Amino acid sequence: MDWLFKIALFVGVGLALNQMVNLCYRLASKKTNAIHLRFLKSAINVFIDIVIIYSLVQQFDITKDISKALLQSGTLIVAIATFAAQQALANVISGISVSASKPYNVDEKIRVIQGGTVIAEGVVSDVTIRHTVIRQFNGECCIVPNSIMDSAVIINTNYTENVGNFIEVVVSYDTDIEKAISVMKEICATHELTIDTDKSSVTVSSFVADGVTLKTTIWTRDLNDNFKACSDIRASLVKEFKKNDIEIPYQTVTIHHMAG
View (cartoon, rainbow, N blue to C red):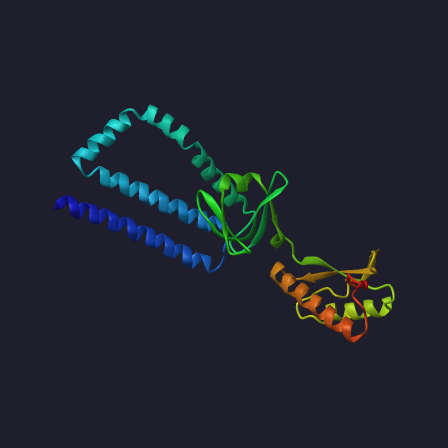
């Protein structure tokens, strides 16, 4: 039963070391969500597992002889392993590159573009030595290899100090434009999440078939605030325009009944 004790001992040591690494990561992540911490945790866990497995193999004559025979033909094994795992190695190397350059961190909203196509958009939830997990807005998760993350275009609005987004609304040609602009300015200025409202202006951006397009920029501290502020302001525009007899035109279909 000595062999069983050795296996249990090595497995226990491996689990304990991995738990210590995870605990250190949790303590460090309370201060920052930098991706290099996640990558480092994942890399150390893998290294511990490899060392434990190799050390355990050396404890038994049969497995020790097998490992020695394998090491004697090391050049061939390395060549085969390198060829077979070249994509995995590319992901690890790219993971190191991404971890060092830090184009994004955990809990940040990003958009990943490759070849002009958006391949993933959402919140970064995890980074491992092989891939990055992006939680999309519909609840699904995209698992993107680090080699793609390293070569793709990453749009990260968290790099900017403030976030701006356009709001456009069409009012009819019969509308008092100055009054509509005044109401729109007041709604934007009084929202609790908007900032730099003194710098924002409401402009007549275009003429369309139904009326005049009024346009402004909503500035907030971050992207989450911007989503909420724009939503609230659009809802308020509908209510306040209705109170002030400002018409937002919409298409209607009139059906004439022909007497037989």
